[in-house]
Amino acid sequence: MTPYPTWTPASRPGIVPLQPLGFGTILGRSFTALRHNPRVLLGFAMGVQMLAVLVVAGATFGLGVLTFSRLATLTPGSDDFEAVMIGSTALMIGIGVVLSAGATALTVVVQGVVVLEVTHAVVAEKLTVRLLWRRVRPVVWRLVGYSLLLLLVIAVVAAAAGAALVALSFALGPVAIVPVLLVVIASVPLWLWLSTKLMLVPAIIVVERATVRGAIARSWTLIRGRFWVGLGVTVIVSAVFGVLAQVVSIPLTFASLGISTTLSPTGDPEVGATVAILVVTLLTYALTFVIQSISLVVLATATTLVYVDCRMRHEGLDLDLLAYVEQRDAGRLDLPDPYRVHVGRALPRWAPPTAWAPPGGAVPQGGAFPQGGAFPQGGAFPPAPVVGRAPVPVGAPPPAAAPAAPAAPPAASPESTPAAPPTAPETAPPSAAPSATQWTAPGAPAERS
Image (cartoon, rainbow, N blue to C red; front, side, top):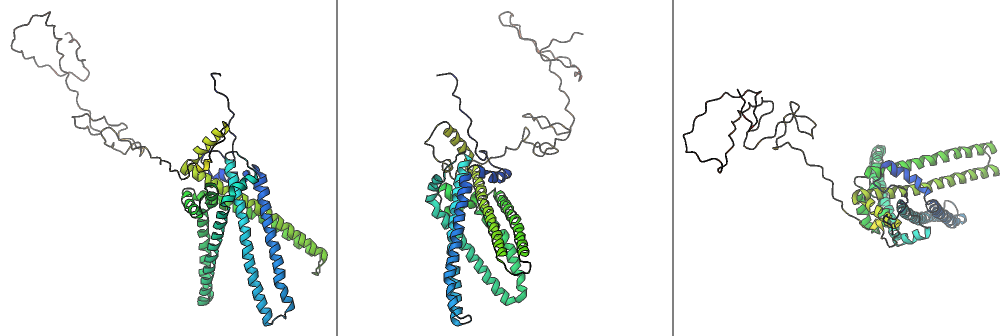
């Protein structure tokens, strides 16, 4: 035992400081978080999305060949050909919707794993893919249900708007282009507003184990005060990766056209030109796929950081995270999840200090101080009022000094001085009032003449 405490190392830093985050911190750390656990944030995410793309493409191609192969046995233009064509097209549309829903489900799983990984990276923890999946699995169907519900709402609204616009075009003719443009322009800010208000739903479902309805209501209220931060981060990240995808795809497209023109200048298709175009096209799709995969991970990371920031500001999550990190680094192992300790805690609101008022409650002439920043007239505050005396107005001359009362002689002790017979009081001669420069302290001896 020593009188000095045991030294403990500093806590491991996470991807963000454990305090309310600014806009630049959220935006910058959304990109740099990829280096914290690249096996999960890049390897797992890109692997699952590639699997989804291959499954959808392979199933669509195979089912398309089987469906439209019947048309080769029919005469073009016949009634049977038209009926098979319509049925095959409708079947392929249905299959495409189902496959798209499956791909969306896989994408949502990736988003849930990324959300959980980022919340652990905030407190400097790195988990394996197996452990992350074990924690996401209980709520994965809620994530899938929310995504399918969102797609259904978007499809219904788009179908209703399209039907209304078609009916309007039949009624008004070419003039209907004006309301169509107005609806399209108005739908952009509406979509941005709704997507920002609901951007925290996946994080709430994964971290707090909330239901879909509860997550929607909580995201709607939790984003208050940080709406523009969430909107700005989402728009900037999407714009950056959209521009990057165009920068990659446009040169490859021109390269494809150049190779085609060089190998077949007369316009006749050749095997070499076809192979070159196919290789360039596949390379373009591969690079675009990689960019889209990274974009999904960065957007999920940014959404999670906005969620953490909102809870820090509204519920004091930073205090819970600091306490968790300190106790974990001290050696405790039975710690609860800090993100679920005080869910929905309401912090006391900060109240501004009470307004200043001079003694007596009167506001000085010339403006209030210090709220208005103006000094009283004359450059000095008026004297404090005295009880029983009328207040002196500001700017009035000071009152004349009252004459000092003569000091009474000290009373003699009754034991040393005999009592004298009472005599009539003598009237003291009137004395002149002391001047302003002559002042005698009470109890001082009189000045000798």
